[in-house]
Image (cartoon, rainbow, N blue to C red; front, side, top):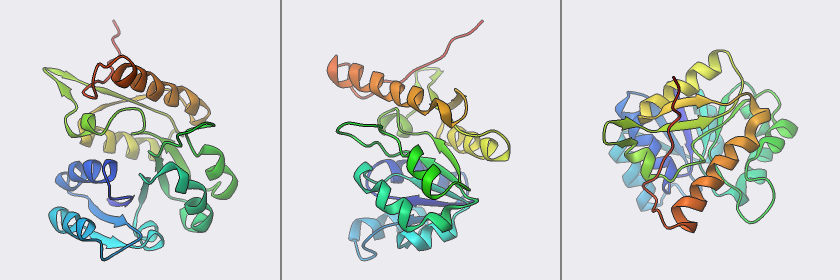
Length: 201
């Protein structure tokens, strides 16, 4: 699978390492192709670097792991290229208002298959998703069908168990899980090595 990862700071590289080990082809979308850290990351993962538009064109899947403040501009600038793509919104808009970009995708790229995932846990839990013998869960939402299977595969390859809570209409619920994580990890000082598990009988 060809995966475009927009952003090369923390979340993107952490996910990319798992997907590179799984055998996927990666291109990181970055603003500065000459950035030494981005170049080192590409070499480490046998990935390529490209500007945002080139990365989106490359990928069957486009993962948005950029600062939340840059989401609107990026979505609008590349709206046509996103149509038909599986899109994972992992970016959090902090500072008030919706943390997700579901409305922007709906307005500008209605043909994209948009999922909300990888936004509700700290990156450390993507690097190491096991707690003893227990595998952490990842709550996500988005459409059904083949694109759902693709996203669940990518979640499993990171080492998490995918838990779909519904279509994109449930995006606020997924964001609420992220708010709970921050309340416990930071507000209650439990630390960032913290994840969730659904138990059923």
